[in-house]
Length: 390
View (cartoon, rainbow, N blue to C red):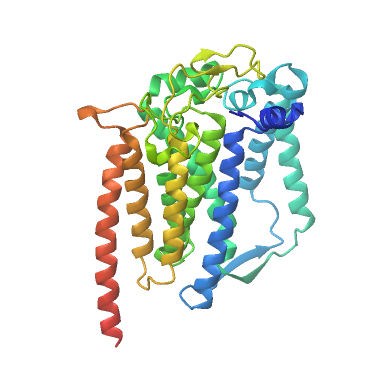
C-alpha cells in the first residue's frame, strides 16, 4: 500500500521525495475523479446543447462595483486557514508524516493564520478596487451549459466533504469527534468517511444551483449522473492504494477455480502498509511510518467497487444517446448506485443499525426504489408529452 505519493515513489522506484508526503494517495485519486467527471460532464453538456436540449443562459453582472464584503470575508477565512496550516509545515518537524491528519485536526499556528487572513482579505480588496468605476454598470453575458461545470465541481467537492463528515458523524459520532480533537486521523473510522453522505449533499447542492440559475435541472442531472459513477470508481482506486479501511470482512476461503488466473490479492488481501496502521506489525518494513498489515486477509472491496463502477459508467455512457426522455438516465444512475452498494455491503466492514442493516444498506434500498419509480415516472411523462406533441 502507498498512503501518499511519497510512499509510491519510494516503494516503486526507491526515490524519496519528502514533500510528496503532502499528497495523500486517496486525495490524489479523488481529485483525478473530479477532473474526469468534469471532462466527461462538459463533453455531454456540449452534445446536449448541440441537440437543442439545453440552451445558453443569460447572466447580468455588475462591472466596476468593487469587492463585495462577503468576498473579502471569504478570502480572509481562506487566508487564515492557509496561514494556520501552511506555516507549521516548515517550522514543526514530523508534520509531513501525517499531513492529512494535521489538516483535519484543530492544530495550527493561530498567529500565522491571522496574518494570512489579513493579507488575503487586503489582496482581494485591492485587486477588486483596481477595476472599480465611479458609476458601476450592468452587463449581460451569455453562459453556455458546460461553463457551469466549474461551479458544479466546486459544489461537488464542498458538498462531498461536508456530507461525508455529517454521515460519518451520524454513524460513529463519538469516534469521529475523538479523532478530530486528537489528531484528525478520521481514517481510523470503520470504512472511512461515508460516501453516500457526500454524494447526497453534493447532488442537492447542485440541484439548488441549477434551480437558482434557472437551468433545466433534469437535463443537467441526466448529463452528470453517469460521471458520478466514474468519479466514485476512481476514488475507490485511491481507497485500494492507500488501504484506508474501506476493505471487506475476513476472507479465509480458498480462491475459486474461475479466478485461478488472477492475482491472489484480487480474492483476498492483507493490505500491507495500510494508512490506518491496522493489524500486525511488519518486520523490516520499507515504510517505518506505515508498517502494519491485517492479521487475516479480507475481501478487497474497493477494487470490486472500482470494477463495478467502471462497468456501470460504460453502460450509462453507451445508453445516453439512446434514451430520449429527460429524467430516465439520472433515475438509472440512482438505481445503479444503490444496487452496486447493496451488492458489496454484505462483505464490507460496517457499523450495523437495527435488524442487522448498515446505514449504506438502508440508503441503498431507498435509492433502488427511487430509481425504479423515477424511470417509470419519467418514461410515462415523456411518452405522454411525445403523444401530445404529435
